[in-house]
Amino acid sequence: MRHNIHLGVTGLRQTGKTVFLTSLIYQLSELGSKGLSRFEPSGVTLRAATIEHSRDRDKERFPYMGFLKGLREKPPRWPAPTSRESGLVLRFFYENQGARGKVDTVRNWVGLGKSQGTIALHLHDYPGEYLLDAGMHDMTFEEWSSETMDRMANYCPDEAAEYRKAVEAADNRAAANILRSLRTAYARYAQAARRQGLEFIQPAMTLISWNERCDSSDQLPEPTEDELPFVPLPSSSDSEDESDSEIEQLRKQLTASFDKHKKRRVKPFLKRIRKCNNQLVLVDVLRILQNGKHAYNDTRQCIAEILRAYHTAWKPFGGINRALFAATKADHATKNSRSNMSKLLDALVTKAKGQLKGGIRTPESEWFTSIRVTKDAKERDGEKREVLNGTVKGRAEGPLNYLCGKVPPEWPNDENWVFGNPAYAFTEFEPTQLPTIDGSLWPHVNLDRVIWKILEGCF
View (cartoon, rainbow, N blue to C red):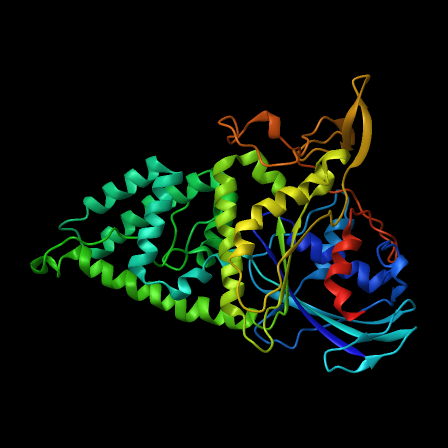
């Protein structure tokens, strides 16, 4: 039998999308199912895959070889974050020695015993920020402005107040000057939100390059027109005789830019992700724990927007029909608390799951580590305690034993759960140098379970 799986892989900033894809491609192209313990009891064997170009001309080739080289250098480098769409195809043969009789999609009986076939796994890597703009598809500029202004006031009240002052000071000024001052004020809000670990900052698609400039600069960079083509405006209460004022002229300009963004960026993207019948969304629950309740509420909204985008892209025949959410960086938490990551992830997506309609299956949850960079240890400073052994990010010495945070079984619900609370601090680690010999096993945690869930419908 022949199977085609179109897998969209996404997640918010720094969730490990490129690391996952690099690890997945290496595993399937070099090893097949070797070392994937989840496959053994099922009697499924995967042969090593061939790597092919994607047939989608609008998509760049995922730079796998460059990322592989960086992970093998001394010192090793993490792959660069996802900033644009890319992809490739893995084609491999499978054999199922433990197959049982089942009925396939066209109601034909697949016999008892051995089954075999080929799988073409089409990988589509795209920034999670693209999904955050999908909700604009059904919104007007006025509706978007109202929601954005409310979000600003809720999460960053000081910056929201400054933004309103910039709007109120706009009288008798040229539209270009008004827009320049509003872009600056909105950039201050975006920076403050980012510092709190917030992600839902729109227009997310175009702000990716500005976010990259922020990460590489000590000063707040001024967003360009391409990076911030429109900003929110409060609802107009002007009388008719003021309809030609500069602020109303600006409103017309921003409305046109908003509609252009939907037409040229949002709608084409939704059309492209319809091709991905399976979606994998990576979530960094440890980062949310560190950043506090504002980050939690913000991420819940992000996940709701992601599932809303999937629902918008769904169609009765074909299109998105399955989503898997996975908590990443499990090796950054102590061993006995890692399984709680799945509980936290389930709680995070519960509301959004209940709002799903159409033919999309209820999303599943998993926790894993694509490339393990720590080892479990039981001693620090002569005391017996659960610790992690690794090289801390930014430090030359190592690997050493470090006390690290434990993942609670449920999300905190108290006033002390705020950004920077040491009770929920998790250490960031540098990558470990990977074997330079092709075909060597890479260390991971539960990667086999994630791969199985991606492919299990074929067996």
